[in-house]
Amino acid sequence: MIRKRVLSPEERIPDIPETIFLFRSCTGSMEYPGTENSIKEICKILGVQVVMDPDQTCCSGYLLTCSAYKPEFSLAVTARNLSLAESRKLDVYAFCNGCYGYICELSHIMLHNPDYKKMIDGVIDQLGYKYEGKTRIFHMQELYYRLKDKIVENVKRPLDGLRVGVHYGCHYLARQYGILDEGGYPTFIEEIIEAIGGTPIFYKERQACCGGAVGRGFTHKENVVHAHLYKKFMSAKKENIECIVTVCPGCNTSLDREQPAIMERSGEAINIPIIDIGQMIALTLDVDVQKLGFEANSVSLDSVLNKLGIH
Image (cartoon, rainbow, N blue to C red):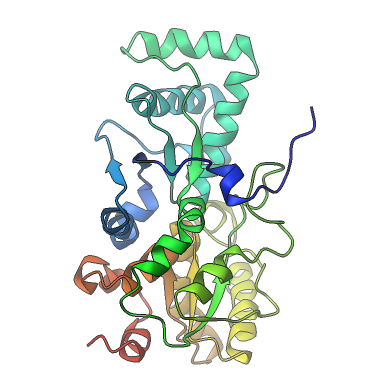
């Protein structure tokens, strides 16, 4: 059967959920807790209940990617994590591209390979969990796009023309079917930015990978990553971009945490603030800035906050 690669938001999420199971990101929760908190604040305003479970663990994708253990371990971890949502009859919403990509692929493997599914069932059953594959998996950016009109209705502090560059990251757009836009030239996050009062800016290196996350932590050398990111940042600077919006805390970490070292190495004053799409939306909905965790950023958000009249 041929599946559609690109879906409309209504096809992707036919019915707006009353309650979602939020799949926590270890990178987001530890490095930028404001990314997680912004989701809860946005959903509260939009009337969507957020459920989390302290029993949920890391998606395990980082170490799987680096061959730290066999895939069977990650299959069991994924089945156990998804069972927490399934037992509540809820769909899973991830806000990390890595988490989203890994749990989608690993659940696909189990549901299309009966021998693997049987093996994993035997493992998690011993721990008191059951996974049937009924829960669906979404990315939070998909829900934001689906609720774009409702977000606009609740905007209290528009972006006042802020020049925003978007960084989509790799894992979502690399999927072969069931995503919101073409991987080569997506625009749906720019559409959200424009709807909440910003000016989306298309820059030459817009689709370039963040160069980091798993690769930066385990395999890529610093000089390779820094040269790659320097090129991306210079492309953004050329277009007078005032901040870059991400949709993944892994990308956020690479673009924000590496920036001071790149400035020191290159002698260039880059200073481009990096902000998650949820944090950006929350700002326009007038969520208390103290709840959004910008103090965790390596590159100050003051220039953005000052432009929006937040002091």
